[in-house]
Amino acid sequence: MPPITITADNLNSMVEFDGPFRVREGGAVELHADGVYAPSVYHVEGAQAPHDVEIDGAGWEAWSASYTGQYGYRGAVLHSSEQLAGGIARDLLESPGVYAVCAVEVMPTEDDPEPEPAGWIVLRLEA
Image 1 (cartoon, rainbow, N blue to C red):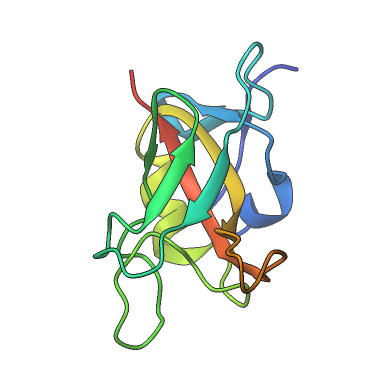
Image 2 (cartoon, rainbow, N blue to C red):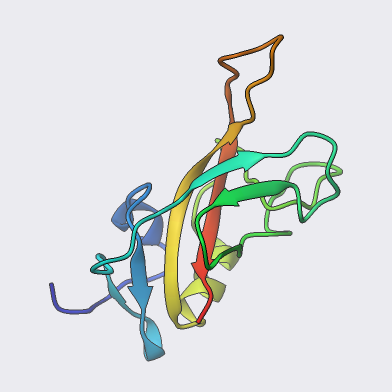
């Protein structure tokens, strides 16, 4: 698929969860990054933000740290009510690279073997 220009207003509706995509210089976006797969991401209870996630995949970093509007929290996990729009979308489109939007799961415990998801995150593949 050829690169298309996506704006901060429609980025949220264009990308898919666990579907890596490439942002080119000037904001052109390739909605598929061939040969790249999104990792699993887990929230680490008690860890200090923004390093409060464990990424199960080599080369990925938590790019969305500090973008959440959650009161008193500046970690990498965004709330399910937040969107990939506005400032986070503008900044992403101005930063060429390979990204993935992924659900963040809570690490299962003996007391809660099937916890609810923690939210979502934007990951960036390190160059």
